[in-house]
Length: 277
Image (tube, rainbow, N blue to C red):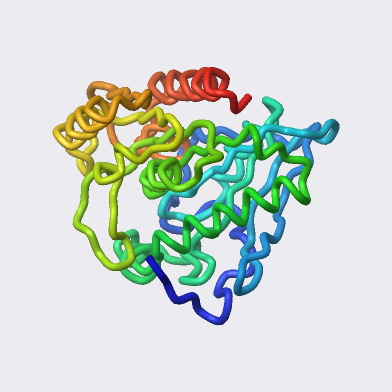
C-alpha cells in the first residue's frame, strides 16, 4: 500500500515523564536506573526528516542484539523508556521510536478517546513499518547494534504492530506481542490485522493476553490460535485467566505483578530460543 507522508515532523523531541492521560501514576511503578548504560534520546533519519526515539544499551561492548520496543497509545513516555533500560541491563540495544511523530504529541492530551481520535487513528500501518525499518538500519549503522539478532516487542497498540512487523520484515528473529488487538475492521490506513496475516509471519511471535481484557474478546484470541495452527506457525499465545488489559503497565491500576513477571520471563526465553539474545 502506498501512503503519503506529511512534509514535516510534528513531534521533534520525546516527552519527559509520563503522558498526562495516565496520571495519577501508581505507587508500584518500576524505575530502572541508567547506571552502566548509554541511555537517552536519539534521532532516526526517515525519508521526510528525523523522528525522535529512546535508545538504551550497555556502556561497554558492541554488537548488541537489537530489540524494537513499540509504544502503547500513549507514545514513548517514561514507561517505554524504562522498558528500554530493562533490556539494556540484560545486554540488549533497545530502541523505541516515536511512531506518532508526524501525527501529533499524545503526551499532552488528557483524554484517551481524544488521543485515539486526533492522533492514533491517523497513523498509517505503512508508515509504521517504514519507520521501524529505518530504526533497525540506524541501530545497526550508528549504535553498535547487531541487526542479525533482531527482536521486537510491543504493548496494546504496539502489540498489534508486533504481529504486522513479523509479517513485514524477513530479517526479524522473533516478536513478543502484549495484548495487541487481533481482529478489527479494515481501513485505508490499517488494511490488515494480525488475523489476516497469520499465514504470512516470517518470524515466530509469542502473544501474551489477558482473559478479562474488555477490548480483546477471548474468542478473537482463540480465532488467532486456530489461524496460527492452520498455518503451522511456531508462534504461540498465552492467555492469563482473570487478567485485564494493560497487565504489564506497572504505572497503572491494571498492573498484575504475577502475570507481568511471568510474561517478562517468557519474553526472555522466547528471544533466547529464537536467536535474538
